[in-house]
Image (tube, rainbow, N blue to C red; front, top):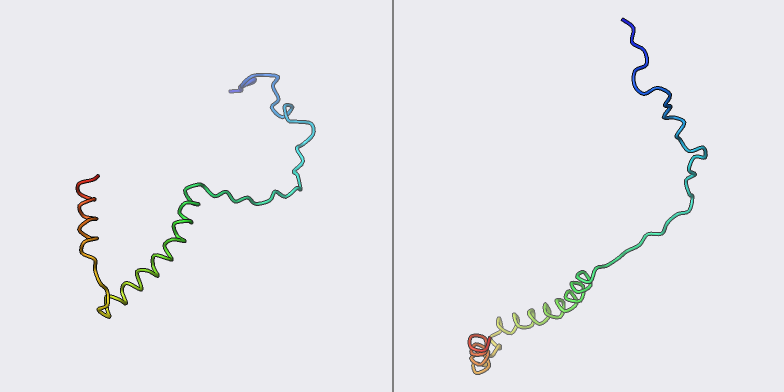
Length: 86
C-alpha cells in the first residue's frame, strides 16, 4: 500500500528560518549584587549582636565572681510596666 501527500503540502518549515543568523555578542556583562532591605537590616543587627555578646560575656564574669548586683526596684518597675502597660 502506498500513501502519498501526508500532511499539509507545499509547506517547508526550513524556509521560515532567518536569513542572517543571530550573532552572539562578545560583550561580557558585569556581575551585579543587589542586597534587599531585609538583608541590610539583618546586617545592621549583626553589628549590635557583637556588642551584645561582649555585654553578656562581662555579665557572665560578674555572676561567676559574685559581683553582679541586681536592682530589685528596677526589676519590679519593669515587670509592672510589662504586665499592666501593654
